[in-house]
Image (cartoon, rainbow, N blue to C red; front, side, top):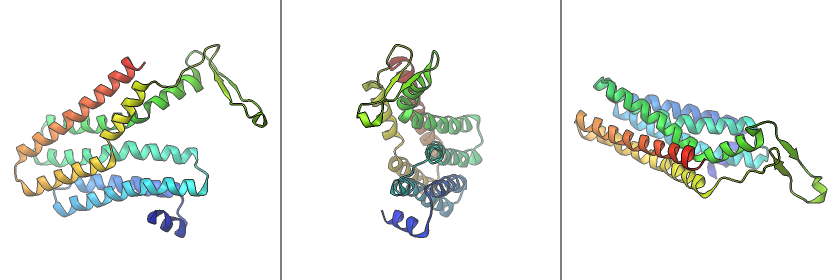
Length: 232
């Protein structure tokens, strides 16, 4: 709330805050890729700033009571970039010390999997919107009643009504969100940076990163399987 107070006092818009948040997150990825401990700590501070501003921009938008489509898009873009970029930056640090296709591929797979996990957090809403509001088999009919009547607007696709996402889709979204939670990601990167600093063992660093990659890839594949084949 204090960050929101300062942002409102100096007249920063929600979109400006989101843009600064994206820049701070991408900057953290660059600093985490450098083989320098102070730079890595600076990268963590920059990443925390990115997470912090991600909370402030929404509060500023709600304060002005005018959230925009552009702001929503920027916010989603930030989530996709800032979960993946720092982890990819760390992988590039390992690749620089020991260039192997396995490490390079693991860094890429981890970054892509984090993007998928973030998408899964909102996939149920995205897919439901695409299927119902846009329509899969043709144009839809939107019947909005007179607001003075107090009745709810109806959404139809042909003669069939679509049901809201089921419990499975919602559960997968919740699991994906917890998996890519900002605090968890920040703490895991903090621990890893300190391991790089305190333990001079390249093989251990590589094994830890490969284990992390295996975990996020497995979760991403599980989410895809449940959403695409089980959740339908």
